[in-house]
Image (tube, rainbow, N blue to C red; front, side, top):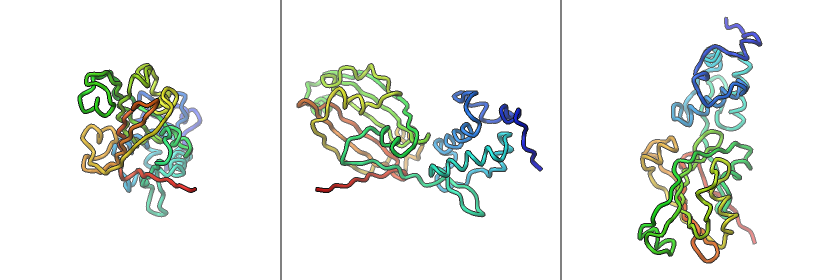
Length: 258
């Protein structure tokens, strides 16, 4: 029979995978650490949508904590629709369908927070690049003109839901390279630096290239919803962004009324 650990052992559980995670802080509540671990395993593809996760009893044994602690972690992830429980069967990875609106240009961080979820981002690339003839033509600039380029992965509750590959015009966004993109999104900066004058966009379904698939923690055979958007400000093209979303966990929606 499993015995519930004492308060002292609950504060300092037996060594587990949680102890091997360098990003975890000692002052993080244990139930939150378990949540972070479960979400990380889902994001990494260890458990895919529809897979059953280890039972609460197994997690109690693995992490050396009380059943109540594990139950809270699983219950909160179920409320967040990351996990789903089936009576008498177990707990499974839920199907994720995150949503974005097309009628307004919003920061993905704002959309995620509006759902009551946590947003974070990971900067993969930030560089100054001499524009190719094709890219220069899209910006209506001479070939070789400097452009700013960034690649950022956006996460919702720890799950990667968008790879944002963006080119920005230094004439509209001179301080683009100096921003802290862990604290602000490119969209949020551009809306301040280059107030929106107009935009065009297109959406298509494409198979993810290997680098995109790795950043989204999906298989290269899986289709992505790809939003390509050009924004204008002050009579110039301010930015061109290609945003990759896992097709099985994302959807676009909107409404219009006169």
